[in-house]
Amino acid sequence: MQVCVYCASSAKIDSAYFEATEALAKSLVASDCQVVFGGGSSGLMGKLADTVLENGGRIRGIMPQFMNEVEWGHKGVSDFIYTHTMHERKAKFLEGTDAIIALPGGPGTFEELFEAITLRKLGQISTPIVVLNTNGYFNLFADLMQQAVTEKFMTDDGESVWKMVNEPEDVITCIRDFKTQKIELTQAGTLR
Picture 1 (cartoon, rainbow, N blue to C red):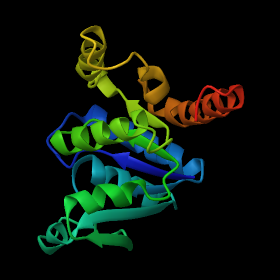
Picture 2 (cartoon, one colour):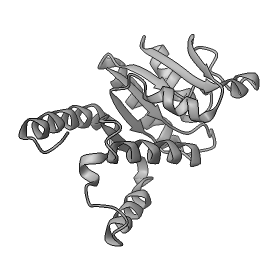
Picture 3 (spheres, helix red, strand yellow):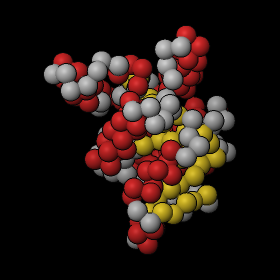
Picture 4 (cartoon, rainbow, N blue to C red):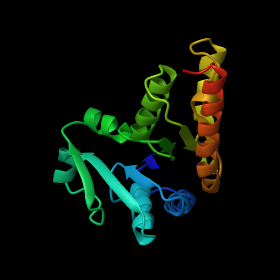
């Protein structure tokens, strides 16, 4: 299974986020997942890559050439794809991806997550999307999405589009449940 992980490059964040990322990375390697990420060497990106590599896992970095030119790329990752633009990078993230995981991050992570949710709502992808809510980081995100439903800017189908878990150990189970639910809905003729 190929899993794309959206996450932060900031190294100034609380240690709990690094610990959760390390636990997730170990879980992904144990589940024989090919990990795709933004290619960075710092913050949660760096921790994700370091842990996957230390545990004998497979990881691919995807980043625009301009980021490589300023040496933001993780030196230990040998499997890299370089793009011309950020837009191309996001499209490459989704190619062949079986699941998307969003970890805490800044505007880049939010942009990637919102695009994936939008594509799923529009039926352009069927990829499970799991949000890891370490330290309640995404609580306000969940509130924002609920506000959009309450104000009738979107339909109340969030649980079928994306799911939130609090512990890294629950991510793989959530992805598997997501896929089982999709199969059941498809067989029932209610999901295309």
